[in-house]
Image (cartoon, rainbow, N blue to C red; front, side):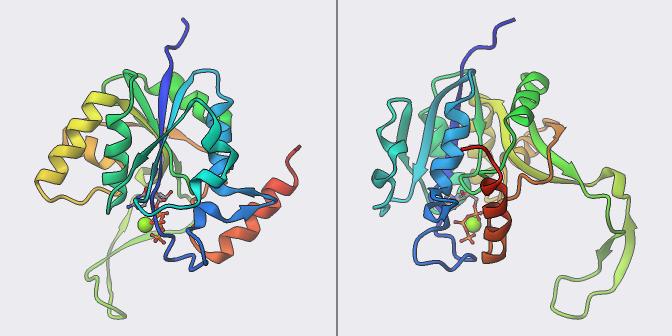
Length: 232
Ligand code: CTP
Ligand code: MG
């Protein structure tokens, strides 16, 4: 069965505070190309991707300097204060039944993982790329205050997953879920959490763990290494 086109929302309106660079981290170059341009490239070459909708900060001055800005499939929207506001702005510009949402700061996602997500999650509950954290024993602490935590219990490791992106949902259902979470003042750090609050159970699809969100200066070296070994 041929898959219908799927529009892609890339939230790229963040300031990159933890990176602490002179420009927002999505504009830093890795092996000669900006992170945001690299992320957009991945989706532009997927056969089932429709338009690439990029949410930018209202005071963004750098996007138009990327060759990505001139691509006729790329659409710009103005993002908001929180990531979820930026995602909502992007979703409202989506014209397809399903939409993929992917952080600008994850340029190392594997196309094969995105294809698997689409193959497995095209239903009402949708799905996300995620990976299981199997390395350490995981403790639940009794407090969130600094330095005084005591462990209450050991969490079952096999049930814990790191939530990554892309996340794939029915466009209309995700818009409703995000609006409802926002109306109730519930913070949502990813799309799946809004869908969970709305009663859905998004499918967890295993990702290559290299699909990291470039967050701090130390992440840049790993990304340089990755792209240096990639064919041009
Ligand atoms: N993002 C966004 N709109 C916001 C906040 C974040 O579109 N109001 C985007 C970022 O540009 C990034 C993605 O959401 O691509 C994930 O957010 P994060 O890694 O936290 O990026 P920043 O918010 O820019 O970084 P920091 O939290 O360190 O300031
Ligand atoms: Mg942030």
